[in-house]
Image (cartoon, rainbow, N blue to C red):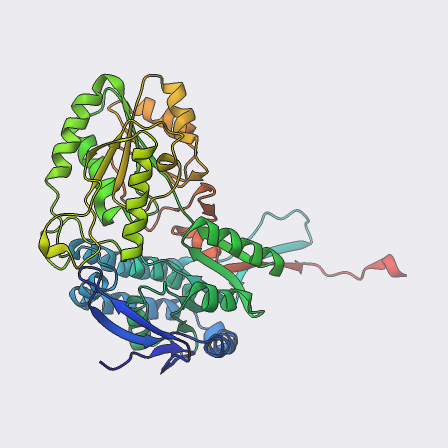
Amino acid sequence: MNKMNIFVGGKWQPGRGKEIESRFPGDNHLVATLNSASLEDVEDAVIAADVAWRKPSWRNLPPHQRAAILYKASTLIDEKCEELARLQTLDNGKPWAEARGLVMSAASTARYFAAVCEVSGGELPPRRHPDLMTISTYQPIGVIAAITPWNSPIASDMQKIAPALAAGNAVILKPAEATPLMALKLAEIFEQAGLPSGLLSVLPGKGSVVGDALVRHPLVRKISFTGGTNTGRQLAHIAADKLITTSLELGGKSPTIVLADADLDLAAHGVCYGIFSSMGQACIAGSRVFVARDIYDAFMEKLTCLTEKLIIGDPRQEHVHIGPLISPAHRQSVQSYVDLAIQEGGAIRLGGKVPADPALQEGNYFCPTIIEGLSNHARACQEEIFGPVLVVIPFDNESELIQEANNSVYGLAAGIWTRDYSRAFQLADALEAGTVWINTYKVFSISTPFGGFKESGLGREKGLESLKAYMQQKSLFLAINPQPNRWCE
């Protein structure tokens, strides 16, 4: 098997770091090998990026021409949808149907920011003086360090690349070490779309080596990170020391609330999808469910029945719901949390183990798991497991419910299931979460801002304002009737 190259400053070349193996989580067979980026590669990429974004040919390029590159990239992604979806599945074990959705989302993101790029402009603040006019303009920041996780590579990558390029910046993408394939494929697509050399680099490797060197580089002017809260906290310190901007989309322990008047069939389907799609490997997974005690038994019966029907298997097959976890080590981490929940007094209603199917033994599979009997203070209810593990807690009092739902260091997302929308809006207003779904869950729109409260992050991705998050504002003062300043006479 030939080693893959990485993309440094517009050039395809072997990485100068340690070897990385890309393995299919479904059976851990070797998909590809490549050498990670080295510190020298980081330096070369940053220097090339700083030169590229400053060139008049890019810096002064009319917005509609930058948009044309993003439109072309979106078209190429659409044309390669099936190929990219299969590569995404090989990269991280995401079931094929979900992978296809992520590919389509990436194409949509590129189109959206192409459109936003074309129509976005400056501002003309109200005049406060008869002889003075002010204009507010937006300019690119410069070199952007974009660091993405392994759970949804192509979608996460594009949510950073597209607005950063639309704003006129250069981007250095550091994908997760476990999933380099999609990021490298995106580099190929942008190259085919006509992106000028140096404006995009892809540097696979360890975050502690490549990522750290990248964000500390003096020419990097913004950090955009999606991943774990501990790493996000470290990056925030680095950004503070450098006095540069940062956006952090971090972890979650999202509560879902099922009120007594909820449509139980709708709620059970939504809760099942909210935690078990993507094998629970999602920051917004609805991993804590609070159910009104009056309907608890009926709801649990429906939820259990639905979960038992989920098909666990090779994610390359169309009908599979539950694929593998990303790695053997991560599966062991999920298992240890289940074991801890039992020690804390929890009872396994379903799952809690590796599937017995002999055909799945080579992969990193874990059964969808439902745990009852825990207090919201248990570690399994407070810490992000990042796997197909759901904790269900009955409640009696809505005021106490809000306290318990908000009793978390996280505040990324939440869900509410009820027929009473007035009640739903009141609860949504009281929940400390950046996104609240009502009678649905885990659906997104690129036009709607996304981000977290508390330790779930800083800043927002998506939406019109996310383009400006990759720009800096400049104010111009124009004298309408210039007069000498007599102060110095």
